[in-house]
Length: 219
Length: 219
DNA sequence: GAATGTATGTTGAAATTTCAACAAAAACGA
DNA sequence: TCGTTTTTGTTGAAATTTCAACATACATTC
Image (tube, rainbow over all chains, first blue to last red; front, top):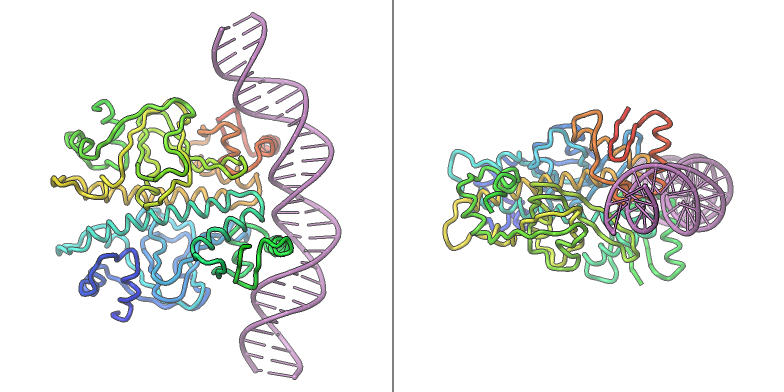
């Protein structure tokens, strides 16, 4: 477990928790590490939302499927990021999404009630954990809001440009790499893949954009 | 201030806080009540996100405007509900939305840092407040997710049906009243108003729906 | 290196949305 | 009550998206 301490220290859920407390804390929380191969389901839609997940290695996608095949990518989380915490802490009886491994991944799963409710022993870190979870949820709500900003745009072009602007801002550089291939990007923007390809082509011909695979540059 | 205690007791942010603590707490938090006429701006886009708002009476809308006039209604909150907490707690430097009064309203505003950081005096309720805020943020994140579920649908019809299903589930009754007029509903669903009217008409003619003004019934 | 599968770009037709303009109905104020 | 304003429904044309099918490029495996 110790080999994960470095990545866990970067996790917002464990901010300001000393490394020598980490072991005891994870023990108290009943944390367990599981490996998942690419495309495997980590949390399944319809099941009870009890666990908070933390990506130790690899990355995961939060996805949702229509009653008729339309796949939607709600979000993607990489190393050190937390997922499913809103549903677990919000006490939803049935997960409205699935979480799958976007690549081979190691995941730390913690039952949320163990974070929220102090154990019998007086663990010094529970208050801190609740504060951290609160902060994390606030950031998550803002992220949801950013996604909303994208999907609320009416056209493929506007959605794409809104997304690219966010990604560029996040990366801080002129050239940046997005975490999606074309199909996934379409599923994230909630648009048709072929229409997306067409739009990327158009924007390049108009000289507003340079795109090679996952590398983009706004001009 | 005392006349608001009843509504404040129903506010998730103050869950499990005794009524006789309420006065001292609001004092410690520097809470202040302001009245806003219909359509007035309570929090303006672009300003610093410092305040958490609570609706004491009336209702508010969280809205966002494109660089070209497209208005989008992110959410609507009624009595006892909290708004802007995610941005304030998440520490965003500039509000990406505006909050306006949907009708004449009384609003309680609290600087968020007063909730997050204990004051010099040892106030017993700060831990409780942080826990409540965490719970509230989790619920808010789930709500954002529900909105995402709507806007991620591709057609006006699907968005409308997804919205109505949510509203019906929330009300628990076959007949239910939505909090929007047609234009606001269109701005919430991110679709064209005239197209929305057409779609409501179609669904009624197909016998899937009964709609009179804000009253709806799914058949 | 050939064969297979995946990812991406392209195209045209069908469906849908948006836009603008107008008519009818309802709400509001004097 | 009348006149004004707001809300809602309707329509047709233009723009856009979706859908299906296919071609090409790229990667992987044997």
